[in-house]
Length: 291
Image (cartoon, rainbow, N blue to C red; front, side, top):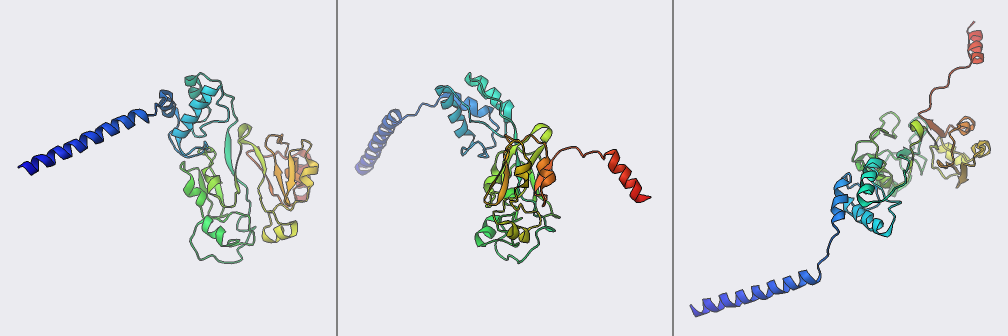
């Protein structure tokens, strides 16, 4: 009986000491969280997609509160929630925000199956990351889309799917939140977040092939060959050539589409523009041919 009593006293004493130590540590190392962090977190989209540059919405909320304390939250945004969400956050924090233009994911590869034929067969793990690690993939282009759908798996909003006929991913603009998950998942960096544009109209070079013109054309008929015709045609200095491939700066582009007309390989894409009406001259010419 004495042994049992001693055991109870010893264990009780150990428990009491441990409780005191834990209490002291909790007080000494306590972190007082700003209540605004939780309030901001509740206003955010809650997708935890990482498109804001943080691991989750909690990280963005903390950064927003810290930014507000320093006097600015510029550069911080929730791509999923968009301008409406950020306006509510700014109102809560008593800040003003610049109205950023919406963006959308753009697939910068036009190498469909008919333009970029297969040259070999890949038998390994069917992911873009694995195929890219093994080499050029199943075509002669070492820069284009691999078509395994890593971007599709990465998208939480069902905004991107593979076209079975072309073998290329296509973005649903209405569903895309510009979170950037698809761009991060692409091992060849062919997906880019670009300004959505007025009425969704955009002009961009749908190629990232850095090979010289002849080599690029041999691998893909729709490749940019770096000829420079688009650069000479653009009056707004929106187009530059680097590593044998053209790039259009969407901040400078005025959507005139003159570069589209002069591109010999049709590597420059213009989307969501109305179909041009046939001129009276062209209609008369067609009638003459038919007669």
